[in-house]
Amino acid sequence: MRYKVNINKTDEGFAIWCPALPGCWSQGETEEEALENIKDAIQAYLETVEELTKDAEFRYVEVG
Image 1 (cartoon, rainbow, N blue to C red):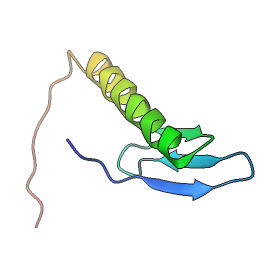
Image 2: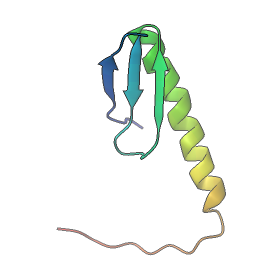
Image 3: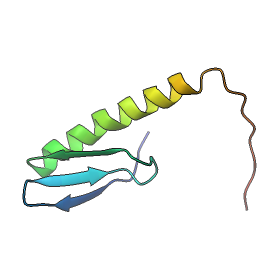
């Protein structure tokens, strides 16, 4: 699956986050390292959401 990420150059390197996943942030000394790190952060985020919602009852809505 593909996720859009935002990346910004900082004094320490690069900050990166995934707008579709609130609170999913990472960083790296290089742009390449930041991109690799956000992949790990997204994976951990999704695994945590799965664990926290494994017993939840879901509904689906159609928008548009």
